[in-house]
Image 1: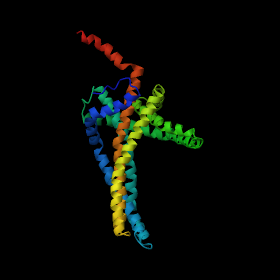
Image 2: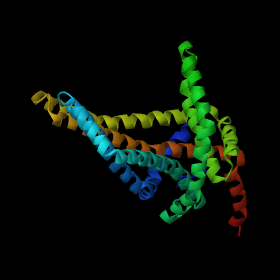
Image 3: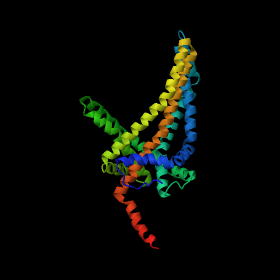
Image 4: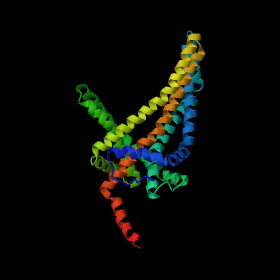
Length: 316
C-alpha cells in the first residue's frame, strides 16, 4: 500500500501519484464507476439527445435551399421548446452534480484509505461517507462561486493585461496550478478536518507557502500530462471521422448524410472529451492528495508519533 503521511520531494509527489494507481487503481476505479457510472451514462445519453437535436436543426439549414432549413429548425424548436429547455437545464444540473462528485470521490477515498490502512473498505463505506459530505460539497461550491470566483476572474483579467508587457505570461502560467492547488487543498482540509470554508482556505494558503514550488510544479506537470492524454484520445476519433467524411464529400458534396455524419462526429468527440476529463481528473486530485498528506506530515509529524507509540508494543 501507499503511505499517505510521508514527507515527499518534488519527484515523490509525481511518482507516488502514479504509484498509487499502479497499486490501487483497480480498487479505486472499480468503486469510482459504481458510484459515478449511472450518472455518467445518463450524461452521455442526454448529451447525445441535445446535440443531435442541435445538429439536426443546423445541418438541415446548411443542406437545404431557401428558407426550408430555417423553417424546419424553427418548427423543431417551437414544437419541442419545453423538452429542449428542460433537457438543457437538467444537463447543466447533472454536470454540476457529477463535477462535485468527481471532486469529492478522491478526497473521500483517500480519507478512508488512510483510516483503514489501505483499501480495506467497501463501496458502502464510500457511499455512506459521500452522503454525509454532499451537503458540505454544495456549500463549498456556493461559497466559492460567490467569494472566490469573482476574485479569480479579476486576477486573470489583470494577468492577461500584464501579459502584453511579458511579465504576465509566467505569472499566468503559475497562477492556474496555484489556484487549483489552493482550492483542492482547501477541499481536502474542509472534508477531512470538518473546517469552515474560510478556515480551510487559510490552512491551504499555509500548506502551499511551505512548499510553494514543488506544489505548483507538480500540479502544472500533472495538468500538462492530463491535457496531452485528453488531446490524443479526442484526436483519434476526430481524424478517423474526418477521413470518412472527406471521402463522402468527394462522392456527394451536398449530401445530408455528410452533415449528419459531421454532427455525429462532433457529438462523439464531445462525449469522449467529457468522459476522459472526468476520469483523468482523478489523477490530478490524487496528486493533490499526495501534496496534502505530505504537507500535513511535515507539520504534524504523524508518522514519527506513530513510530514512537509503537515502540512499546514491540517489547510486549
